[in-house]
Amino acid sequence: MNGPMREQHGVTQLAKLQKRDRETERERERERETLQRTLLSGGLWDSLKKAAFVIGSGLFFLVAFRNSVTWHLQRFWGASGDFWQTQWTRLYTAFDGNEASLFFIGTMLVPTFFFWLFNGFLMIVDTTGKPAFITRYRIQQDKNNPVEVERVWRAVKVVLCNQLFLSVPLVILTYTVMSWRGELCAPQLPTFHWVLLELAVCGLLEEVLFYYSHRLFHHPFFYKRIHKVHHEWTAPIGVVSLYAHPVEHVFSNMLPALIGPVLLGSHMATTSLWFTVALIVTSISHCGYHLPLLPSPEFHDFHHLKFNQCYGVLGVLDRLHGTDDKFRKTKEYERHTLLLSLTPLSKSIPDTPKKHE
Ligand SMILES: [Zn+2]
Ligand SMILES: [Zn+2]
Image (cartoon, rainbow, N blue to C red; front, top):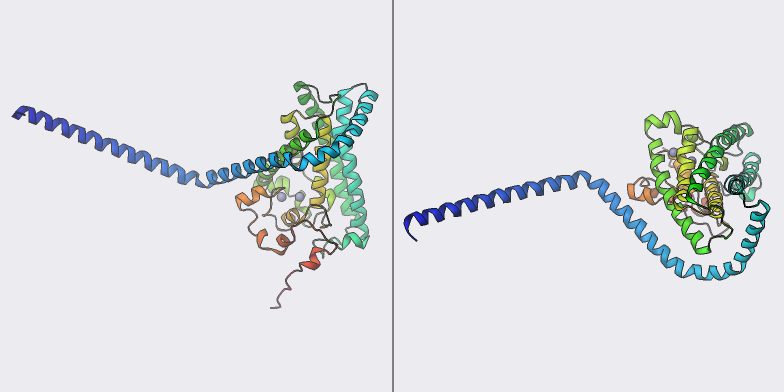
């Protein structure tokens, strides 16, 4: 290589080195930006990943469950399924296949009937303090013993207004929206597996929508204007489940339950069953008695007692967002199980005696 050529080569080498430096610098810059973005969104991203994991594994187990346990149930259903199909055909013929009437009866009147049947019984227990067989399972033992009739009556009036002026129009609106999608009251009932799967999807959607709308209602702005009404009861009773401000009744009670059947285009029978189950479950979670063989109401009872813990229904999202951290250190948490014996949990897991100062 002669002189000028060597010089030329040196310049090219230098330019290459400078270019590489610039590239490395740009790469570092990009890395820094990515890192910053990750750090900023870390909390949310982590929660989302965890949520996806839990919901994903939930669906996985659902499929496994569907293939094993439900096989036995399906055998049972095989016999009783004919029974239900016969009843449905009879009803369908009686109404001449009138979808609107069938839908209103199934998704409004039937769930409401079971709501009042269950809560009517609970209200007798609450106001009379009898029978002791039930009241011995009371969670907040020094409260509601018994509940004043006046107070219960005030709650009943609000609930009736919510049902009449909000639930009824909303169910009619739901019918209009759903009937665009197709037949809602098909002469053939859905299969047992399909009903189970739809109930599970409805339950998950309700958990997500209820959790976030409920947390939003705990924002000071909405709390004092809307959600405070529902929290007047620090020791709730069954009927308080629908005792809420009209805005809360629509956004936190109705929409999270409606969204499942609307998205899935469920058969009226499935929707009817889902609404009935949802209403009974929410009544149990407010009833104030931890009864044997029924879902534990400790979680939501604790929410009414402490306000800033346990926002969800199933508790999955509270776990992910850490909004059950205080609850998990309490006796109530230890009692938050399915009671399989007749001994009240307040006896088998008693409160720690308060220290005298
Ligand atoms: Zn509540
Ligand atoms: Zn609340």
